[in-house]
Image (tube, rainbow, N blue to C red):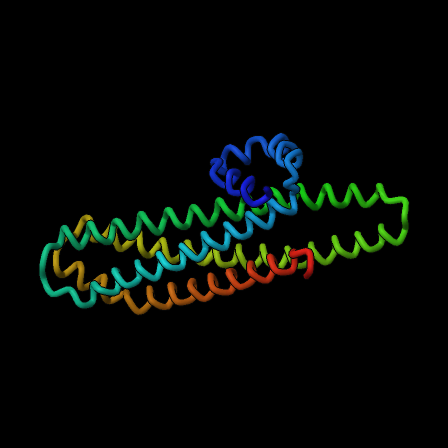
Length: 217
């Protein structure tokens, strides 16, 4: 039941969810899906978005690096191909940002609720156990969101280079311009390689966080 409800929720636009979080959480809780479940689902979606971004930026790097081997052919086709790669990369970057925003949104609601409910315990032992669990979960979450945001921050420098190259090519559609862009391939490759490594670390951290949140963890 929870899985199907979470799948349905994933189809709703993120902007809509952000604009009415409290009613949304209340509605989900009525069908047995709690903030903890939503957080885990959004971390999974965030991991998937980063994996897709990783694959897209690797693909874009191949296309931009191919400029160094340009041997004639249609300059317009070359420009159009690179422009499409830029657009796809920007879309994947936005997906990553939106997913991270959604994770932060539900985590704030979860930790606020959890802290409040600790005060409802009459049993001191239960209260102490819950406080410890909350602290441990916060610590794991803080590591996760820090790594995810670091990976996200690595995207923009690469996009800046992509945009510059596509814009330069747009106004200088000739073989000489393509050759000059090819000269920047080493720097671009270095930036993308660093980005891919950050993405891999973030994806691994998401997996670790999800595993730690499992009932038998």
